[in-house]
Length: 328
Image (cartoon, rainbow, N blue to C red):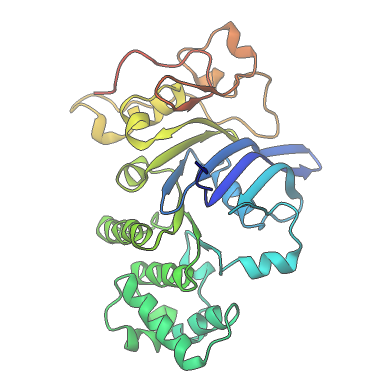
């Protein structure tokens, strides 16, 4: 029986920034897959390399950074060696990205219909009336009321939540196979955030679009993702099903992240936190990057840990993982 090909397969990806001060290993030996219709959560503290991973997949890493090794296979095609013209044909058509700030997508001096129609005609030979109808349908798909009227509006006439919905609509308009969402709900209030998360999940289920959701917010990932990859200092330290990782985290870093969520804290008890600061990617010490902050660190952690597969199928990069108990 032939195995089903994943929409995206990232294999041993390395993205380095070559600065005057040295080499910054922003992404170092990262591997994961995303299947059709699946939502993958990529989480970690700021500066861990999760956004650079997304930019690498889309070929948007600017100098002095570049992909130094590994493979990015999109539906079987290796993207790492693509010429720029091929990238332009791919971006916005087969692969789309939603940024944290919707104004990185929207032009403030152009009407919404102009921008959406341009996004369609850049990749497909369709009439303007057909493109306008597709734009109208895309706005309705993300829950924007009165789409005909909204098409005539300018970005400044929308609230932050509505602008983010428009950005999602533009990402969806060419029916891509993969969407990368880089912390798109961070600046939104909880109600609007919940609506966008629900719509994103429904769109993936209904259209088969694969979604990578990049965030530092575990509560967002808990209700949205099918699987989760936890990043630290440019590497994935734990990856598995969303329930198994959040209920019984094995890596001490994942354990610390989940323990820091306020909703897990007992009333009157100080919030749990991970001691110390994230290390500089410019001067990483040999061995496990987390050992200076880790409550389980030992002499063996001076050696770089390899990824191993646990009994439940998850991947963990640690010599001394938590294996005993689930988090209460």
